[in-house]
Structure formats: structure tokens, C-alpha cells
Image (cartoon, rainbow, N blue to C red; front, side, top):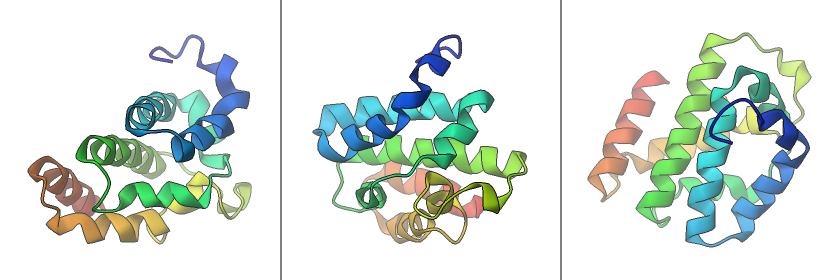
Length: 136
């Protein structure tokens, strides 16, 4: 999943990655977030990623009690998606409620949770959050 060359082979597995993300432990979450970040950087995969129905537990990755390593990777994923959403023009009607697209728009649940992390105890998380919030 590091290069774009073979990512298309995993397009039908994107929903499974989100299920693993909600059920797996710390190391699994970090690795899945890295994979999803790589997908988000690929323009051919971005729309498929954004259209994926994600478990409601996805937004819980953006809470202050989440391990800093997981949180930083979740924030990185969000930042890549958010930057690409600003660069591309997407029709809201293309996406269903409950899709990653709706969670990552400026009125989405994830944005509200990220704003709440501005006073996080970990300096790296705090810096990343401030950088993101300035983009909203």
C-alpha cells in the first residue's frame, strides 16, 4: 500500500480496514491508519475512501484518552483528507451519510472532536491539532 501501483487491488477491502481499525489493538490501529493515509494521498483511491461507510466508532479516534501515537496517525489521516477535499471539487450528493466524507467535512463530527484536542497534554498532538484547526 505504500505505492499507488497496487492499491487498486485493495479497493474492495477499504471497509474491512475500517472494521479492523475499530476492533484492533494499538499496533493494528497505527498500521491501518498508515495504510488509509497512503490511500488518501492517491487521487484514484481518495473518492473510494471518502465514500466508504465507516463504523460510528471511527470518530472516537479523536479523543484525548487515545494513545498519542494512534492520535497522531489519525490526525495525519484527517489532514491528508482535509487538504485533498479542499483541492478537489466533490459533489455532496455523491456520498451517503455515515461515509468518511461526511465525517471529515468542516461541519463533521471529527472536526468538532479535533478542536476539542487543542489542550492535549502531548506537545506533538497539540501542535498537529493547532496546525489543523488553523486550516478550518
